Image (tube, rainbow, N blue to C red; front, side, top):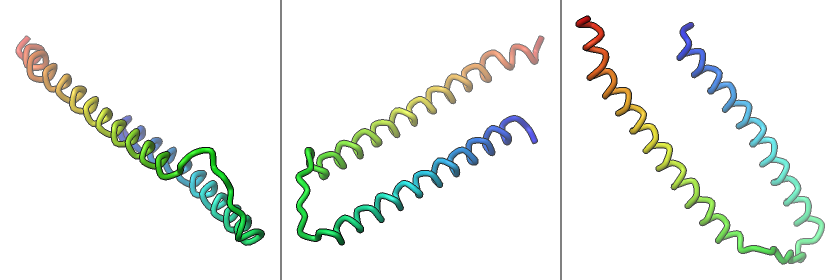
Length: 94
C-alpha cells in the first residue's frame, strides 16, 4: 500500500472513530433530554442563550470553514501545478 492510500485509510479510520463517539454522545443527550421531559413535562428551563441563534452562528462558522478549506485546497493545487509546469520539465530536460 502506498503512502497516500495509507494516509487516506488512517484518515477514514479516524473519522469513523470520531463519528462513533459523536453518535454515542448524541444518543446519550437524546435519552437524557427525553428522561428529563418525562419526569417533568411542564418544566420550563430558562436557557441562558437562544438556541436558534446558536444554531445560526454554528452554521455560519462551518460555512466559513468550508470556504476557507476549499480556498486552501485550490491554492495548494495551483502551487503544485506551477511547480510541475515550470520546474519538473526543466529537470527532465537536464
